[in-house]
Amino acid sequence: MASRKRKHWYDYLWIWTIIYFALGFFNILFAWLGMIDFILPLIFAIAGGNKWFCNHMCGRGQLFMVLGRSLKCSRRKQAPSWISSKWFRYGFLTFFMTMFGTMIFQTYLVFSGAGSLRKVIKLFWTFKVPWKWAYNGSILPDWVAQFGFGFYSLMLTSTLIGLIVMAIYKERTWCSFCPMGTMTQGICKIKARRG
Amino acid sequence: MRKAVNDINRCVACGVCAGECPREAISIYKGCYAVIDTAKCVGCGICQRACPAGSVKVEEV
Image (tube, rainbow over all chains, first blue to last red; front, side):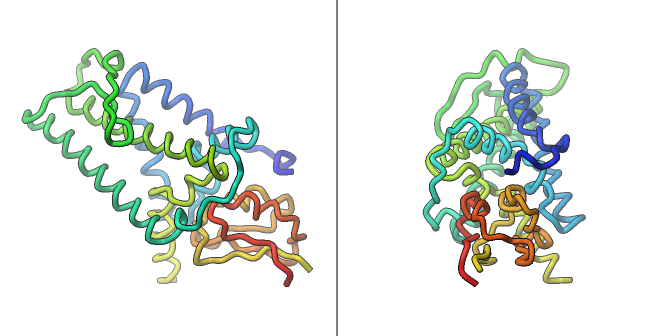
């Protein structure tokens, strides 16, 4: 039924998600483009007091819909209720922000000269995958590339978690505990309460 | 009459239900939760099947 609705340009942003990971595979500096997906939802929430990004523009959510529904890669079963419970959502947000902070610290170490650039992607904050081909030096300082590797790791890990829960549960189960979603909804709730 | 009912304490305001609704009866209120226009809702249950948080349910009202 939904397919009968008029399509907008932003209904195709799932393609952006694929392009993003493809670009980062060849050159890690493209990982910086992922900051758009971090900053835009926050601008919508802080300035507009809405979740328009989640609701209409999230390429990742759209990709889960395309893979899960159109390509039938999802069991479409209800996830256990603890996944969307407040303690798990805020707990996951806290964990995610801690890992983001660690990644920033790693970048700082390279920036200050205390650490050296490591051309690896860390999956699930544990498994190191060599990613040498994606960076052969540039005019930019090493910390810029280090941030790229760290940020790409974060984006890839969260997408993989999203794909796993998409396959086991409903298409957009990731949305129910997405750190960005939790953060923007929290901001919107504070804004709505203030009137 | 069967209508969609949303548990606003569970709702994550992702907007999946709003996007799926064939009657465009659902909107996201100020980024906080989904609101169902009961005048438009026909209780088809598409939103319930799409909701990842399990907060939208079609019930007898």
